[in-house]
Length: 599
Ligand code: ADP
Ligand code: ZN
Image 1: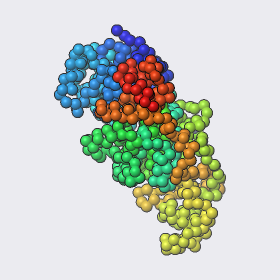
Image 2: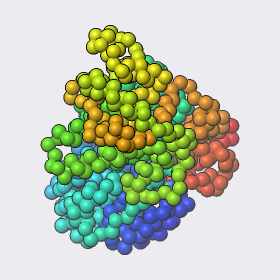
Image 3: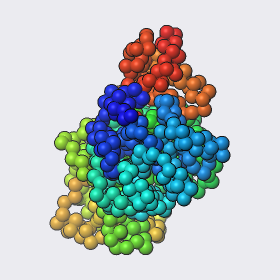
Image 4: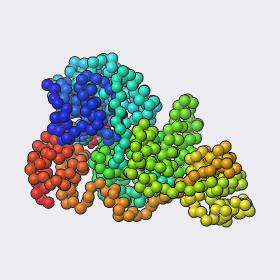
């Protein structure tokens, strides 16, 4: 029997309506069609295959690259009363037998499986004997060498098109970059299938970026402002060592911080992953290796302490915040050195010229976002082919438009200080010269005798660093990253020095210290003065602990907030709350009403 998708959506998942695109994709798959789904992280990709899986007869097979991810999704589905299981190298014989039995009697609806396990002959043979409803290939960009998550095992998935030609294959990813999309289509034999493209905006994520002036103070100020002791946060760092040192000082600051990077052994990775999935107010300091397994919907903020290499990476990483739709924030800290280092890295990489050209244009797009003087989200979304009709009002530039100033004279002063000191010094020394500081180094080199000595006395260090950084961003200045960070004017500096080109600069705004109360209000997703919400969270915590599952698989924060708001006094009223499906109502309804009566 084929169930009706809208009914499954309401009954099992407790949601009233599909999001744009979801309904179309579900109908397409149920009609036997294959396709590629491009939606941002948190856009609602899972329902695109979970709903058809429950509507159609047979077993839905979901390919997933990470054990932790599979486990959490299966736990969440089971909470909703769905017969789901995960098949991977880490499960014991008993669990495997159980899966085989459930496949045999047709009771299993969703099987999550790692690509290497799926493409083993035994697994394929056993699937070939069953009625397969669909294949979902999650995180499909793993099949592409162009991205940074290439998984060779994904290449073997071509076998699905050959052996199961009539079974719909739905590939899903948040990477929208054209090159990767083409690669997915050809690798998974989806050339003839439609591409479903969701809107890429995630309006609940407030985006901001700032020059890295005092990293710790800036990060501390940000975390204090956006976190209210609930939910989780992620700090992305540019190196493994930095993830460890950052976690360490955050712990000294009293936060529950841990690190994650590809150099850790498997058991440690899993343990940290688990702590992140389950802890309250936990902070993960990680390299980009930490990513795909993050299913937690209540990540409240994501910070980057180094410049990401492309808008795609940045958006994917910040997209891990606020999947529950509640307010979340992203902060990017970056410096002139990051830009220069990234450029040099591309230059010196062994990649083909074509690949370098692509990497370079991605990087420059990222620099443009970081240096934005107009709505940051519009610039960001344009990279994904989305054009906002107006400024977003949900980014730092919209909230607080930076002053633009004519930096031509400042740029000339700085460039000439660089030239007169022989292009042998980093930004610190050049600023000492400009500001007329008689340091030992200045005296030793006789730089106090230069005509540029002290010409920039009245301008702050922060502003001078901003001038230098913006000249780097605009390509007029290079930084010798393989040496000692000497500043080197490029060809593009010549017209500026000659007065033939004007340079507009953005006044940098550096926020540290403690926040205004108004800001705190804006960032805090749920009012903390609702005792019902707190009581529900307490109840959920003990329930999750008793079952050994992450709290959010019981109910999302958003659902609890809604319940606290409505204060239902009957099961019928509770059933109306979005996120409360039939199984959860049956399992937890009485307990929730009990909590309601207690407040
Ligand atoms: P993705 O896999 O694209 O990152 P998810 O499938 O995890 O996103 O969905 C993100 C969040 O949105 C989840 O909390 C999910 O329950 C919720 N969601 C998805 N579709 C709907 C819908 N139609 N109505 C309400 N919430 C939804
Ligand atoms: Zn904006």
